[in-house]
Image (cartoon, rainbow, N blue to C red; front, side, top):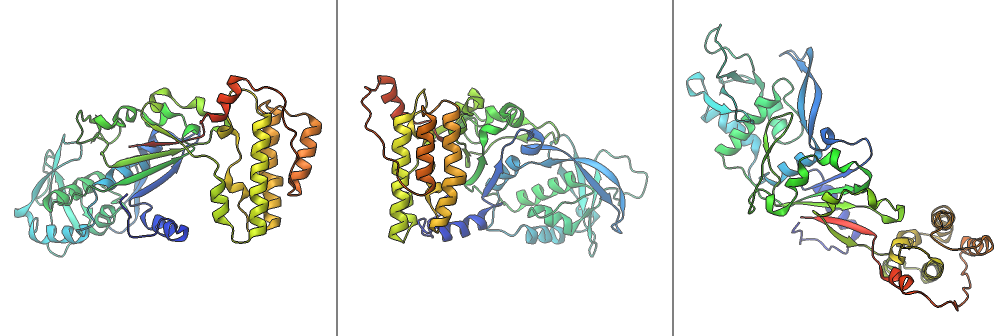
Length: 394
């Protein structure tokens, strides 16, 4: 993201900056089985309409942007200019009075409306260019609340009566004052293998490809189903998907999605454990357990999964006290290894399991017998296989 003014090894500072950027340059979501396109890209959502007195006058269904669309829009946000000040200037110097009305195209480009402002009013007067005038020509059947338009422009609210007109008005202001950024934006998708990819991404599967991004060699635009907007994915949107192959669910990842991502392994790393501790006794205990459990898994593994698929994550060995380390062993590490054994991933007898668990539960090491069995070529290959992935896509 180009963040160079902080110490990236200082965890507290990194988290502070992460929070500052969340919702502006960093977006985070988690995939699950019920998530769909309407949540991720855009969908019709109910909206309460109100009159000028703030009283409810009914409910309408309007297109609402999902997190993916919000992340794409954040790429073009220009923080060097205050959009609310630009709106004020636009009202006072561009469309002040009916005689200075502007024709503003809708977001879909298939229609347009007149917009003007009368000095002192709290609303922007709007009327479709296709409407038949039955009142005075200055009549406005679709007024926009100025404060709500400003909130919509900064992403903190919505003009709840005519949001589509408000969005078009905001785009007209941005065009007038050349408010266009080119920010680097990151969308993090946790548990990316848990969602129905085809259902969530829809036509975005094609748009994710780098050569089909906006400004690339073969740019592609699609018309979104609800807003009818022309939509493309900017080059500066980076998508990071995370998942863990320990749960053996990578097979659910659609091959079409796999081809659009680079797969990067994040291995269990003992050096992270070393850096975590300042107290040497607890550090040595944790490192010894890490090494002991790793050796146990190596010796007992069978099947196609390699050590990088099966090794317990280093965070399980990072504790503030001996008591906490015991709890992590008892309630997190041992149940995971028990699942490996029950599923036949580790070839361990009941007696071996009981002995190992008793030792580790008490933060003691298991004495492992030296194997006399000659390892097969396949078993050696498993040791170097890397299938615990973080997915990153530019």
